[in-house]
Image 1 (cartoon, rainbow, N blue to C red):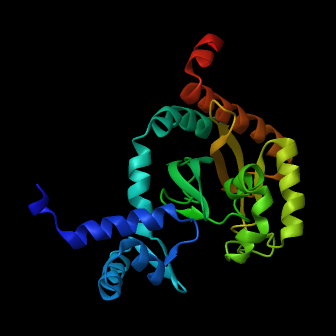
Image 2 (image 1 turned 135 degrees about the horizontal axis):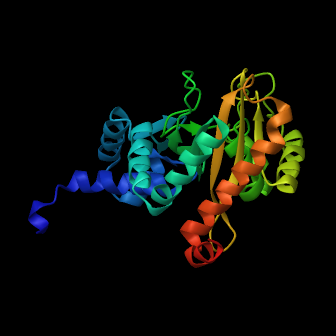
Image 3 (image 1 turned 180 degrees about the vertical axis):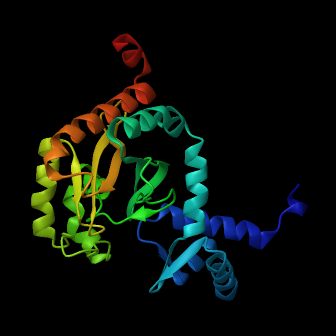
Length: 258
């Protein structure tokens, strides 16, 4: 069986696995040392993977690329979470008239994996595979609050906080205040922070341990989602997130509540 193995293809698979496991990416030197293969070979493998968009180079470090994100989304879409969540997302779209997304935490932001578009002809919701910035997306801020509250300086140093609009919060002290509000009310908003005329709201999905593992997010034009409707919409989004969490991670409890 070993005679059929292509060594450099095997090395490329090892590169992908190593980079995917590293939150901050890996440099050529680090990969060369871990692979124990010649530097020129490692470099050629990296160039090929970047050309295919499986990896991306940022400065001297290699990170997961867009094509690998999309493949991961396709895998996620077949997972139990996506399968079980989809009917709830569809019902929430009908109940709110907004586009609804299932979002997963990622080392560099919020990864959108499922989208249920609203009937509105304006497609405002980002497509599956999109990685939204931590600091100015509703789901991104939610993950910062529940998963990365004490790591804001490190994330800022990595350049992961971006100013998309004048409303975007980029400073760690201001973000910390915002995250405390999110922890207190149990949901996060993007109040014209990612796009100037769009408002979003996200609530956490928790697993059987109570850990936030995903989020439900709704998106609509600000004219269709005024501030005075936030409390009402938040209640619907939070209920959907709770129902998904119970159905996927605590099915017996969910069955008893029916």
